[in-house]
Length: 200
Image 1 (tube, rainbow, N blue to C red):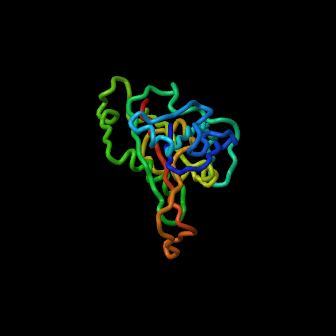
Image 2: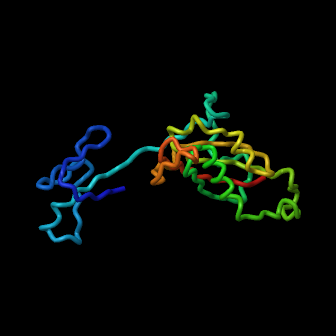
C-alpha cells in the first residue's frame, strides 16, 4: 500500500529505515515514487510512504485473561466440507468491551442468512445434526487477551463449532465522545470482523 502525504518533513519506517526525505529530495528505499498526473513543479510537495505489516495468527484464548496452550488450526480447514461463508462486523462504541463487539460481528454474519438445506434433507446422507461451523475473528492484538471465547460461541444457536481462530485484525478508533454514564473509560470504539464457515 502506498500512502501520500503533503507534509514537507522526514518520515521513518517502524524499523527506523528512512522512507522519504524532505520535499527537496527524492524518496528512497522501496523505490522512487512519482505521480504522473502532477506537473513536475508540484511533485516535490508530495511524499510517499510504503506501509507494510505482516499479520500473524494468534492463539485464541478460551476465556478472558486465560493463556491457551498449543496452536489453533487455521480456519477454514479440511476437517469439514464447506458449503457457505458468512461475514460480519461488530462494534462496541461505548464501554470498551471487545467480547460485545465480537458477538455483534458473529450475529451480523448469521442474521441475514437462512440455511434450510440441513433440515430439509437437501444434501443426500447429511442430517441436521451433522452441521459444522468454523469461526474466524479479526481482533486488535492488544484486545485478544480480553476476549471471552465461550460467550462468543453462545451466539450460534446450532451447528457444532469445530474450530475457533482469532487473528490480528479489526480496529480501535475514536468514537468521538467519552460518555461516562455508558461505562466509557475513554473514547475508544472497538471493531471486530467475523467469518463463519458452514459445512458438514
